[in-house]
Image 1 (cartoon, helix red, strand yellow):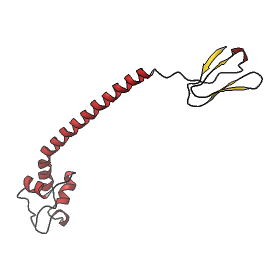
Image 2 (cartoon, one colour):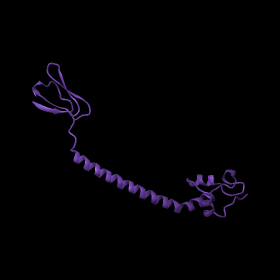
Image 3 (cartoon, one colour):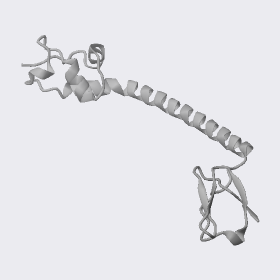
Image 4 (cartoon, one colour):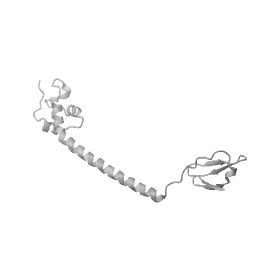
Length: 141
């Protein structure tokens, strides 16, 4: 007699000579006389690792995830700081690139339109951003 254990998620059947099948549910073990088995055995899978090994691996992965999340947060902060330093230069270049003949780029008062500058910069720009980066920007006729 040999003990077979089903480590798979679904039931597995062992064909027995004479046409019978012995079914093993997930986690179930049965002793079966090897001489009575007909055909190939199904894939019973392998036993799961011990719970303490899984807990240790889980803990290590949780720690790695926390470290990676902190790195992402740090990099996001660095990127935001770099963008904040770069924004005035981008706004100034965008204002310089506005088409003085295009009414969509300018207000009726001759100031650069916030929407037009934002589109060129690729991020939201405020009137204060434009005033700080290009204080003398006016539409020329």
